[in-house]
Length: 165
Image 1: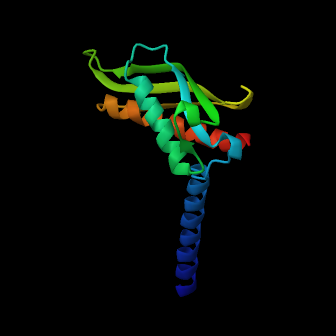
Image 2 (image 1 turned 135 degrees about the vertical axis):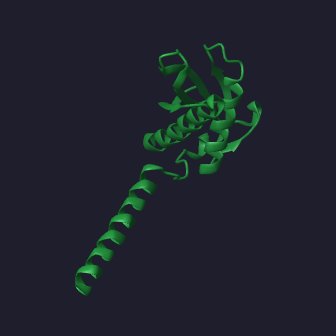
């Protein structure tokens, strides 16, 4: 009986340890692997076709924060940059996804789809291009859900940037 108990405890510990490892790999926080000539960045533009006036500033901040957190990037003024990053929001939506019999919203969802590219300041050559999207459902905190989708899209963009080099 003691052997069976020991075996079960070890199996459970191994399972939990392997799940933790999988989670860490899935949520990569690896430093950005940019070429040296593209590490002094300036966000040149954010194309925002939505009616949300705050989207551009929040998205700029999320991308700056995520890239800074990953390291090997310095945000500088346009004149000091060695490369420019441009961002295009393809879509950003918040919509009701479930209502009750009285047409009261029970669940909503928020989603974003965007693309970004980095170009050399010297010759305008495109050094990298990637896209990211994220969606999330929520019941009451619309602003929080919208902030979360932008944060996760910035994180996914940084992940794709690492895969691109």
